[in-house]
Length: 108
Image 1: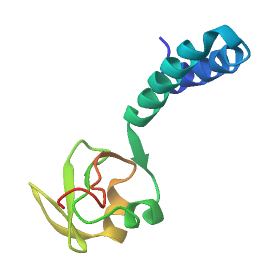
Image 2: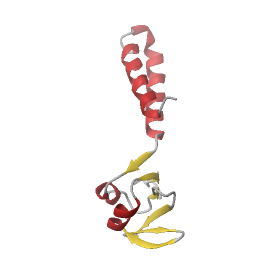
Image 3: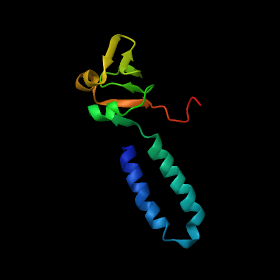
């Protein structure tokens, strides 16, 4: 089975070839958009305290045990756990998958 990372790598190689074909301009544009969307949709992970600390307030992660935590203020809060500081979460619960990270434009 091909992983998303392998698929993206293969697609980028194919895209380089397509870009050498002048008659493939429309195909290159569409193919580039598809590969970019696939790469953007791929699950992002955090594995260090620095990466975890860089996430904005409101971010939601699934830790290595499958529990979901949300960053509220300076603490990570989960359904079945007490609020925890970033350094504790990093030591005990990483790596984690980022389920949601708000952007500057959200909520405006």
